[in-house]
Image (tube, rainbow, N blue to C red):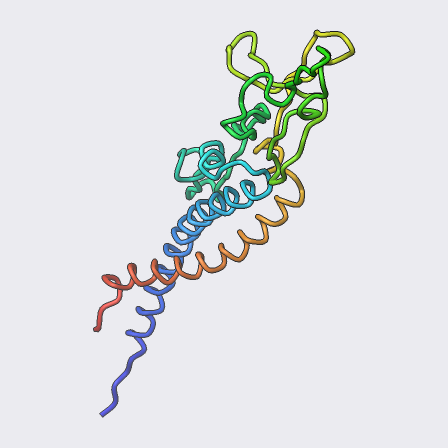
Length: 215
């Protein structure tokens, strides 16, 4: 007796080809979005480490596929986006110890017995930006004209005014820097390869679950 499997093999090959054509695009979108979410996590950790800004604050200023549909990959848009455009620099006061955020702390001068003023307590405001504690010469804390909030200022010249606001690190600038982009890209490439392999296996499993049955 002779049994031929030619028709079965041809049908199975056709089914598998159809599964592949359907599974790979779906897996690609899934892997891209998963990688985008992971890259945001990497970016939050690395930018926070570099700037000294708390991860909670960095996370609120960086957006990815989970935050907005326009950053997601789709069948017609084969890329996911991580965006830092909202991460503008804030005033240096954010990096000053909360208990010291008050006028005349750093530039306080004791009155000597002679009645004269002594030396300033410090040459400027002490802040911990970029992960490093530093005294910023010539700076002081005062109230913002519009907001009324305490901010760090410096004088533009030798006179009392005008003043300029002193800013700390920028999430956006640090995120877009070449070293940071290179590091995040390397991490994303490794992450995508794993995510893609997992996604393809998952899509094929789902597709073959009902598509390919014993004949």
